[in-house]
Length: 455
Image (spheres, rainbow, N blue to C red):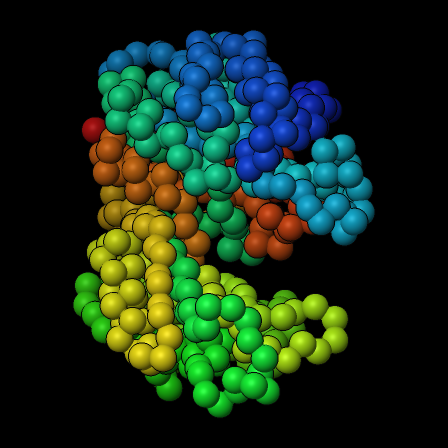
């Protein structure tokens, strides 16, 4: 029996197991789900042990880590698989067509919170590895699995575990499936992620909300001032106006531009999918380049003044806005945050007080495209999906990938199994059954292809 034949034979069993995994409301952001998270980690640990892995539940200051290991021969490559079993809060619940923690298949897709992000994707690898073990009696590589319960709350305890467990986590390459395919019938290997830096700006005016008739025209309105400051964050060409923001940004290489030209235009799809009249962004760059290779600055929300029903004629005491900046390799989040703070305080009028809180972030990362690991992943994907993958980047961030590089010295293969429209972090999250099956199939080929890579 081949691993793929084993997958066919166990199709119903695999789906039942996935449904059990998805049924745990392992919401890491809510303390009320602490017992659910512990139960999910315990179930996963026992499940991996039943497959043949040596397992360990690792306690942290927060939610536990699941660590599993399958040793074959120290002469073979070692692959570290990473994923997470925690999920986003399901709210707003009234927008779900079925209960978020009672998985349901509709229209060829599995609907549940965590179906795609990231339980379904990491489980596809687990089932693929199981198929190889059961069909052949072993694995062609040494495997380590690290599955955490705090990814959706910024992996606060994982970096410390990496630093303390370098020997235990020693490997040749990391595999992560927490991204997307390029399109429904076009798989991809992701070789780059943008980083992120976070800030919040507070503009303070009077010591309390005051009457806009009595005081209007005599003091600054914090909301007006904040809006004017936000308007100065970009120039007329869509470039971020913060001095020094681009000082370490490298130009897009001819090789990258050649790869992007192989992809269909993104503009029409963006307009159709998001119902916007036109695309927008930094002048002189394509939509792919703007999303994958250029840094950005976005205001995520503005707060200030009265927002209830009807009118309330006030000048508010303060206004604030939240800002995130997506960064590219070589940009340091702390340095960018300092530059943002200096600029905001410089452009603020003397009639208000400004405070900027920054939360650091994560650096961008790129996997070398001239090495053998990327080619091995591409071969496995082609066998699993029946089509050659394209090479792409992601505009989002997976901060722990940076830690894998900086702490463990490991590059990461980002193999997305889901789709961009799978509603991750939103109501009605889904994972197409076809994608789950293709993911399991790819996962049976991947260890064999990685085994061919010589150190």
